[in-house]
Length: 155
Ligand SMILES: [Zn+2]
Image (cartoon, rainbow, N blue to C red; front, side, top):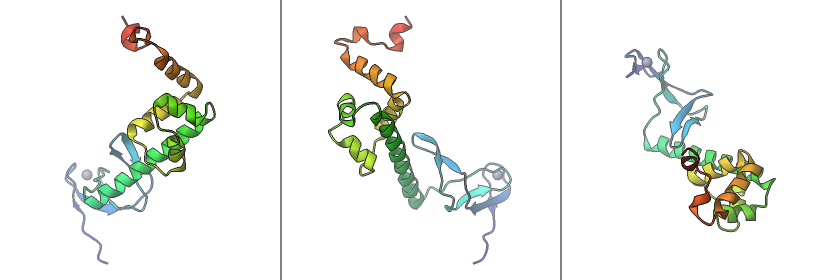
């Protein structure tokens, strides 16, 4: 196979853009500023200014979306594991308004979490005991007068 000629870099104008595989590369995708790219995936890169140009083809978009879902699943599994050490999954499902068995499905990787749920579980798991108590207290207030929100404590 003939080696492709480099193309012009839109950032630095050098004729130095070539497709390359490589480890340790990331790209911003949806909620993730640093989605890990597979090391075998060829990505056009400038050898002069090191700019990276992730292809916008349908094939690449499908691949990136798959990687994104895998990352959400991975983070969700870790968060559920941390939360499960503190409280039963059924009680956590009740607390966050999820259907019975949903967290078990997510932990088993048989369901795709939304970014919203991934973030919620990640925040709760950042300090499970304390955050679950705060979530309990949030729902326990009969009116919004007692909510411990920054807008109220700042005044
Ligand atoms: Zn360049």
